[in-house]
Image 1 (cartoon, helix red, strand yellow):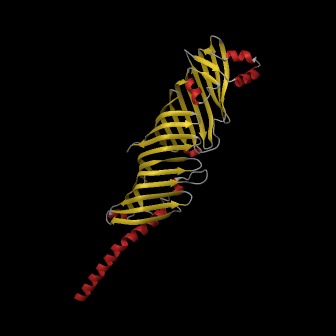
Image 2 (cartoon, one colour; image 1 turned 30 degrees about the vertical axis):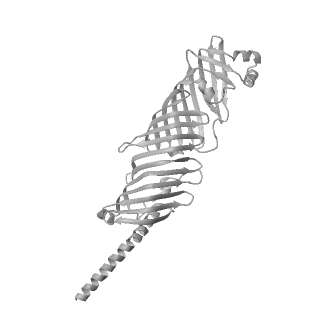
Image 3 (cartoon, one colour; image 1 turned 180 degrees about the vertical axis):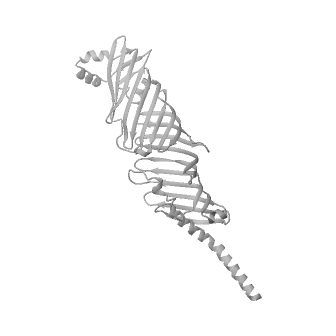
Length: 382
């Protein structure tokens, strides 16, 4: 009997020893299988594992990748749980630190979350909260290119982001370049704050843009949008309907927009010079193919400004269209002083058309300015 007890104790000690030495491999194998079930068509490797069996598992040097779509690497991923909950397939939290994600989907259509994750597949543990801290993100596709860092907390069961903070060095889409963009959403809030140090499209530059973000169903809203352009101020709102492709709608009011800054920024000083301040509004619409519509109207009130057209070819074209003598037109469009004016803005293909009407003591002047090929028809989508 004593020998049997000693033998049983020896077997138990050997079994525990083997289990302890093989627990790392068992845990890594289970984690790799579960992650491969969660991330569709992925390959998962985990280098090492540490654990407190009743409370947490910690994996280091994790890589999750999918050919021609993404490559995710994390220095450490920690799974926290209660023993009773893990036995019923529930995990309290999954967190990742010191991580990077290179995302490079092919084709013009961006994959949705359901194309990447299979959270409803049988055999997958349910997760109460997922946390990412300072994820270094690099995203490159035919429609979008960006780089930056993201931190967030996500509740998969509620499909809700409870905390979000993102800082992007650059974002490029269809000729639009955003520099120094930050998005933040405080815990418990359904709204976020947006700030962009610089937005540029061709020669149009908006500085210090900011606004409030919210989402309703498939529509993102940016309310109370403000910024600076051409020495003046703009304000308005923007909507992006991601359920339609996406579709973008932007409305802006402008005040104190400097015409001298316009001729300088758009490199027109060799063609004409113009001074004065404009107030008015402009609306813009677009989709995944680019900008599709622009409609604006601005007025210049007292004290007005001055106009001096130096481009003789421009005056020759006006003379040919109007039937007026070149010499008369040239004299009337040089050193002209106006008291009031109006500028209407529209789009014609890839060109921006600005119809200008001025009124001064020397009479009225009407002409148009065309920004040829201003709309970029090729490149990255909105």
